[in-house]
Length: 303
Image 1 (cartoon, helix red, strand yellow):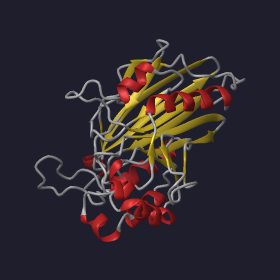
Image 2: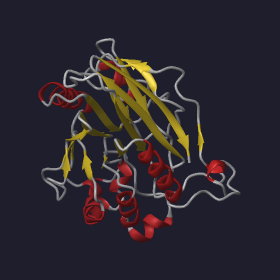
Image 3: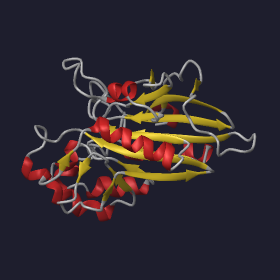
């Protein structure tokens, strides 16, 4: 199969998005700096592409194709952050037989930079997740899961800061409440803290104390819940908080062709994106920074 037959880009955002909330004081020159954020969510152990006879996703997905796509984008722009919003585990026999080893090793080969935890990442218990960490050459962040009384204590940080070509990027994680989704014996003494208040602490620390130019939330809260409009989700997080520039989401398997552009608590633009499930799509968001100005564009790439 020719590469063009299985990699199809959906339409770009109709216009570049001006992000007035970004702090750009660290840029002294007129040079434009370009950062590409690539992301996945809810891959659920789908290593192979769907078969050509699949009724919904024929010939789509697959780790090898995603890896080739990521490599080609890195050749375009070396300033890439590759992130995952959780539920790496559970969904195919690869997980049943190998317990997450293959998933973490392949993500390491693709040079993922960071991931957060989804509820299904606890399906082999907290011990099963811990046992696979040596296979991950990337870190995990979750700011509202408190692991202090578990074996994951110290292995999952609330946030991580990256410096890409002079662009300071702070990324923190948020997880969904495990009670009701995961058996207590699987998450043990993990404490779930309110994601709303935690997110504001994280955003303040990253934007104002650490002086990050870009603040990203890796969320496994879900994009939106039509059957439960009061449930806290990514769109509520976006509109009721400040100092977050991008929310990369998971959990609800929501396919967005391009990021939603919402207004935060201060009326500034915030991007919210999610790219479905099973590795069918790769999210791409490009940020262009220049002193006192910044713009972004995003799309979902079908693999």
